[in-house]
Amino acid sequence: MKRLLTTILILFCLASLTACGNNQSNNNTSSSETSVNADAQQSTTEAVSSADSDDKALTNDKTLISELPENTEGSGKNTIVIYFSATGTTKGVAERIADVTNADLFEIVPAEPYTSADLDWNDKNSRTTIEMNDQNARPEIADDTVSFDGYSTIYIGYPIWWGDAPRIMSTFVEAHDFDGLTVIPFCTSGGSGIGRSGSNLASLAGSGNWLDGDRLDAGISEEELGTWINGLN
Image 1 (tube, rainbow, N blue to C red):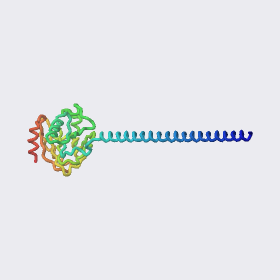
Image 2: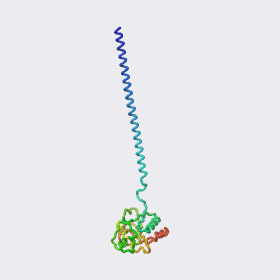
Image 3: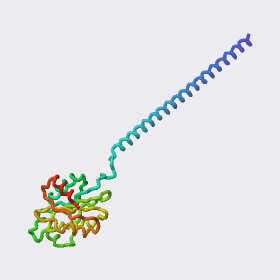
Image 4: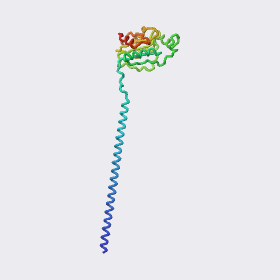
C-alpha cells in the first residue's frame, strides 16, 4: 500500500514539473515574440521617419532651386547706354535711347554727389569750376562695376560743362577697354554743341571706334531719336 502511494506521489510531482516547464517555455516564447514585435515596430517607425525626412529634404531642395533666378548669364543684349547726369536731364535722354535701341542702362554715379553750389558756373570757387579748370582732375566714381562683355555698341552720355565733358567722364573712360566696340557719344546742354568733347574722351580711352556723336535736346522724342540713330555712321 505504501509503495502504491509513493508511486502516485512521484507521478504527481513529475506531472507538476512538466507543467511548470511548459509554462516557463510558453512565457519565454511570448516574451521573445513581444520583443521581436517591438523591434519590428521600431524599425518600421524609423523607416517611415527617415522617408519623411528625405521627402522634406527633397521638398526643401526643390524650394531652393525654384527660388534661383532663371537667367544668371546677363541680359543677352548687345547695346548699353552709359551716362552721367547731375540734374536729371541727361538721364531722361539716356533712358529714351535705351528704350529705342532695346539697350541696357548704366549710370555713372559720383562718390561725392554734386550739390547746387557745386554746379554754380558763375562761382570761380565752385567744385565744378575747379575741376573743369584742371585737366588732370579725376572725380571718383561710387560703383564702377559695369562690364562690356557681350556688348558691341555703347552710347555714352553726359552734360556739357565749360565746353567739355565733365571730368568724371575722363575717370570712367580711362578705366575701361573699348577695344572692338562702337562708341557713340551724346550730350545735353543749355545750348552748347558737343564740340570736341567726344573726341577728347576717345583720346583718353585710347581704344574703340568712336563716332562723332551729337548734342540732343532734353525733350527729344523717340521718333527723333530713331531718325538720329539711323543716320549714324
